[in-house]
Length: 341
Ligand SMILES: NC(=O)c1ccc[n+]([C@@H]2O[C@H](COP(=O)([O-])OP(=O)(O)OC[C@H]3O[C@@H](n4cnc5c(N)ncnc54)[C@H](OP(=O)(O)O)[C@@H]3O)[C@@H](O)[C@H]2O)c1
Image 1: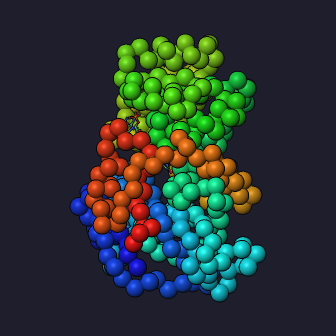
Image 2: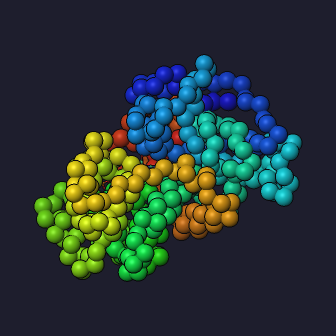
Image 3: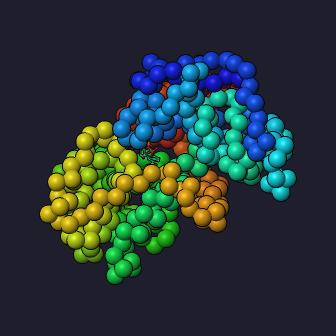
């Protein structure tokens, strides 16, 4: 079994190693998956670095820690107590989430975390369809809950980082649900690209002077009660400035900008800042989680620009792979390719 692991927190390109070792034993309620691809999410890198943006730093066992929480591949072994009604059998193509230690050519995962795949979802899409979609849905739920009772019709929402993988999904789902989304990206080049691949909702570049005036014009007089932000820093304060006084909420789920956030406007305008983390999705009732996974599968079947691949890297090129994730101008998810190992 080949796995990517680290023995200390630090810069991912420096601390990550590839190691070969014996297979992990299989528990009665688990399945073994032979992986084809595992994604590298920005949050995976925050965990490896022990960044405060990850939350409590991950625990590193004496024999190291394998990052990664999702992936795709083929079932190679099924635990003795796994319910036959789940239909999990050797050779079945699956995606899985949540499971720790996904950056490995073989992962032992809870049977309850495994989803079977139709032929219409390729492995490159399946490997990245769960975390990003479920984050998008968790964020949208928090945004909906933050609306004042009299502000739930004709909703206008601001969305920063709109070209990111999660941002695209949030924009898509909100638009499908009849919400007017005003999308924000950094540069004019990103705005042009997003408009081309996912047309419809307006897109403005925050590097271009006067963008706040354009947002106000696009809102057409409607109060903006909620902004969804994954950039943070100065932009969080700028976005708050566009919200309705007293009822406005910023839902923040990331800090792509890497800066400390500016919340000085929040007290004088009685605004709310709500942080959201994907972990809370596990507290959703089972029927809600099933519905969310069904939506992830439906969007994955549409594929294309919602689940773009930036590049595939073999495990031995993990340093190049993590460097690529942090590169400016990247679009799409960087995948670790275990398919030819
Ligand atoms: N809270 C949670 O549970 C949770 C779960 C998943 C993800 N997240 C967070 O959500 C965020 C988005 O994740 P993702 O996987 O969708 O990201 P991603 O696809 O890797 O994001 C790439 C995009 O982010 C934009 N970007 C990068 N640096 C930026 C900056 N300094 N200012 C503004 N935009 C910047 C770039 O867009 P342009 O160059 O086009 O502007 C780039 O296209 C990350 O912060 C991630 O950690 C949180």
